[in-house]
Length: 65
Image (cartoon, rainbow, N blue to C red; front, top):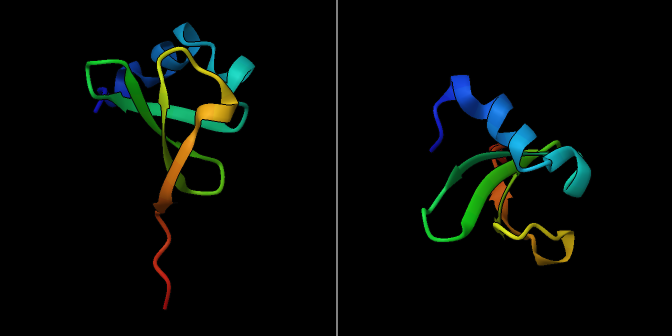
């Protein structure tokens, strides 16, 4: 997980607004995979060579009751 105070700069450096609008990167596995959350609360991973077609969603941060 990236430090909270570095998220804005990291997302800017990876040009997330250009490649994955509505997503934010929050961490990495250190070997080419980035992890994040989208505007709908879904967690995802994507290779560092960011392309929307390679996004894999894991779930959501919202509890279902």
